[in-house]
Image (cartoon, rainbow, N blue to C red):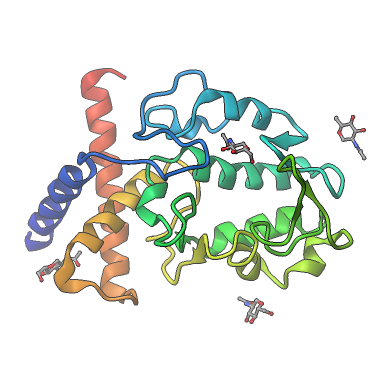
Length: 244
Ligand SMILES: *[C@@H]1O[C@H](CO)[C@@H](O)[C@H](O)[C@H]1NC(C)=O
Ligand SMILES: *[C@@H]1O[C@H](CO)[C@@H](O)[C@H](O)[C@H]1NC(C)=O
Ligand SMILES: *[C@@H]1O[C@H](CO)[C@@H](O)[C@H](O)[C@H]1NC(C)=O
Ligand SMILES: *[C@@H]1O[C@H](CO)[C@@H](O)[C@H](O)[C@H]1NC(C)=O
């Protein structure tokens, strides 16, 4: 019974926090604040609340993707569809997620720092890309950028398998410090519908300053699973009630 009231308390807390005004990342073509965006061609996970305009998703909606803005995706040939789908998830999160600014880099306003991603997400992504080709280990620093802002390989194209030892190394290197593999398998993002629930819990935990510990305990983990299911359930009830 106590557990139930604790849960109810946490859930009401998380809802009130998530309703606070959100901002988008600075620079990089982001909006100031997230708004509904009904015409997204890709990244539709963020339709309800988006930091990107629809135009950037037009180039992303192709397969294979040739380029996004001034960055070519095919410098080592086309990506496989499966691999590309993962790259799109990351690009969409960075450009469109209303939550990306929560992990804003302290020094570079357009950058993100240590977004907690699930290990399984990185492992599956690595698996999807291991036979595709790439010429940069860190896509933020290793391209040669010309005067038009277009990217060129400095090094030869090699397979992802050769470039990165495993999914963790890939996630934590490919976009510099942007992503961090979480030591939790619940308090982490997978770039899918579950993220909203997980982010509510992460935000609530970080606002609870009396208990800010960097390592996740077994209790945290259990609470996360319970809360995640509870929030999911509440949303389903709400959607039924409003007939969405
Ligand atoms: C497109 O690239 C230009 C030049 O690199 C940059 O100034 C601009 O912010 C980019 N736009 C978006 C939407 O990323
Ligand atoms: C890459 O995809 C484009 C568009 O489908 C196609 O025209 C091109 O031939 C492909 N390139 C390679 C090297 O397969
Ligand atoms: C992934 O590769 C890195 C670098 O070689 C290594 O240090 C790490 O232990 C590996 N992690 C796993 C989970 O295999
Ligand atoms: C939040 O802080 C309170 C008071 O210190 C503590 O009892 C509670 O367990 C914390 N909740 C979480 C999710 O860490």
